[in-house]
Image (cartoon, rainbow, N blue to C red; front, side):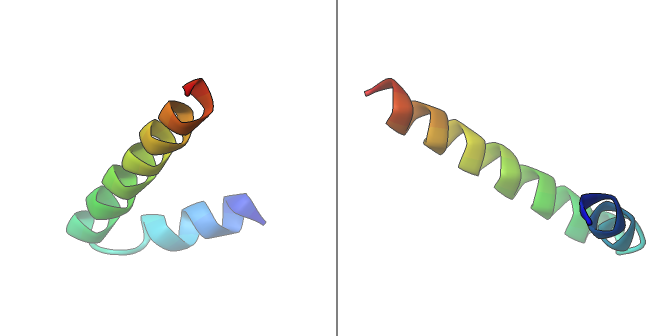
Amino acid sequence: MFESLYIHFNDKDERGRQTLQIGVKFFLNFYTHQLNR
């Protein structure tokens, strides 16, 4: 499932993929900070 999603996003334009990666990084950072509290 995740592989197909990755391929789907990989076919998008470069800007969209970079925005997705930034969103994922931001979410992971926020999530880990919430766990550390």
